Image (tube, rainbow over all chains, first blue to last red; front, top):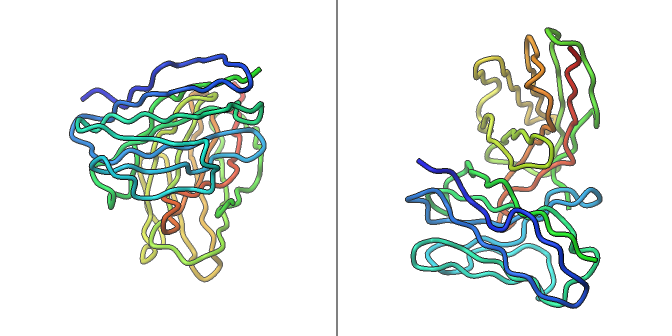
Length: 113
Length: 110
């Protein structure tokens, strides 16, 4: 089975712009979670989607949003980018929302200038 | 906020030696997981230990869990250069899904 894929792998944006990141989960996995990783804050949970519905949400401002499609692929969007949004964004999938082990993609590295 | 705190933050050992990393957490848990991350890439799941388990093995990995002390340790035996990575413990905390510690950066010297 193919693993979790994320596109693009690298991205450079400027302050004030918006960005959309994409994640394709492992085939058959219906839960997709997003995490932000920065040197200062470490790994932080953004949100989780299951069956096209947001199930859980972390402590991030409303500029961070996401959605999930019927084929379980997910996108996350960050509007009005700030310098502090520079990070590695990781997507993880699991069979269901209750499955404990998550399978991570390689991440999208976003640099905001 | 971080649920787990890893110790040490960085560890450098010679190839063939054993590496031990520790993780402490704050709230009660159902399980604790360890993940590995190579150089800013995605995380790889290593092992999951449930709250009613005290020790678990997987290949060269040994994980212990002490719920009374709210701590866990990961032991990697006979280390190899390919074990060079950052190691994170993670716990589930309600709506937060996985909550990670800051990680231990392990370097294996040839």
